[in-house]
Structure formats: structure tokens, C-alpha cells
Length: 137
Ligand SMILES: [Zn+2]
Image (cartoon, rainbow, N blue to C red; front, top):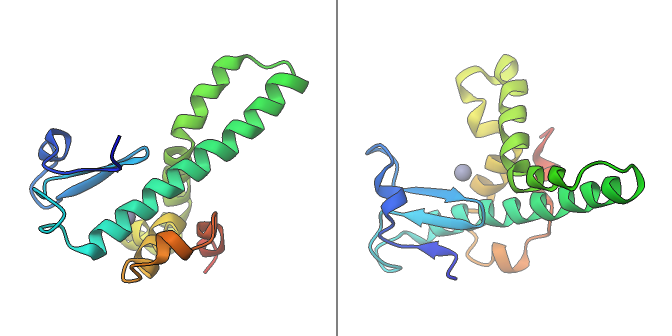
């Protein structure tokens, strides 16, 4: 399954000012094809897709340990699929008092994606969990 879904019906549901959304590990865009979509946007959204995978896998390992050693229900694994969004919203809420309407741009996931969106080799060469370094920058 391809990471980027061009001409996506999901993206067409977005309000007009937005062209692209990353849902889990997939990028849904209104752009018709690779040539039409700017590379900068592709880099930005693919960084979010990687962040989602990092959060899903790392939270899954923690939940797996809790299932094995603390006896919690395996239903908690469902949280790993939304762990990226939980952290994203939590950080946004925590940064509102400091950044106000600019809190969104200062979420660590966004800081990493914006900082590296012009680097066409970032997905290949960037470190995993790099967004952690952007939490307090
Ligand atoms: Zn973004």
C-alpha cells in the first residue's frame, strides 16, 4: 500500500485551504499526482507519517510490557494507534499558555516537520524520534 494517496477522497473532505492530511502512516492529498504535489509538502507530511509509526511502535512496546508484567488488558493496544494524536493534542494544549495562537507551529512534531521540509533526504537520513529534541526548543 502506497504511503501517499493522490487525488484522495478523504483529502477532498477537508475545507478548501488545506490540500493534504496525514492519517496514521498515510498521506491523503488533493494533488492529482507526484508531479503536481510540491516536494516540500511531501517531505513535511511523510515526516508526520514516520512520527506516527514511531509513536505507535514505541507505545506498543510499553503496552506490551504492561500486558505481560502488570496484567493489563490487551485492549490497551488500541491506544498505540492513536498515541501520536494523544501526544500531539496534549502538547498543543500545554503550549497554548506559552505560544497562544502559535501553539500549533510549536508542537514538537510540527517543529521537526517544518525544520526539515526543505531537506529532500531527511526521511532517508534523519534520526528516529528526532521530534523529541524539538519539545523544548
Ligand atoms: Zn505538519
